[in-house]
Image 1 (cartoon, one colour):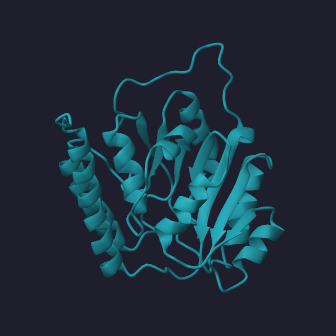
Image 2 (image 1 turned 180 degrees about the vertical axis):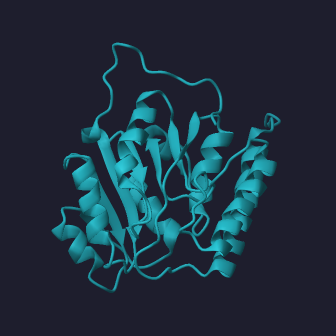
Length: 247
């Protein structure tokens, strides 16, 4: 799925490498998984990608992340969106990849994401549901299908996984948009670029059972995500409307 015409890089343009990539995440009490996640990134990228964690943990997560070579930015816990927003804006490399710190996402697919960015896409979004996401709790899987259906109707564009945590962005995309949501940031990070006609590609990814306990209440969190989808879609639709010139 794309929007607009795909903008392929010119033949004489240098392709991005992992030296141009920052992999970022918000972390909160993920000491069981964070070491493996950072190590997997290092192995897949030959240690070239920068890893940035914005952390509000009370356990050993930041210590373990630093031991494995990650840059840790500590902040008071303020929710998922606040941490991830800070993480995506912190690095200065031209490509930003978001992931979660619970070992559910396949870091071995990072080269595929970079290849698609080099093919001209502005955003590459991991589609967990393409392969069925059997490791995901059934209630969460149903909710994610419902979020995608809601967003698709409101946008008029078919999307398959609005709340995935694994995406790659060109830096100009994340710097050009004001991100406002907290729990619903993952959906916002897909919806606003799509409705602003950036070239977006959903790419199938594997999804594993998480390490450690989930921090999100599925009922309350689901309601907040649905509310965010409606709010962001309406804001972007209103933004598209012509405005009368001021006198």
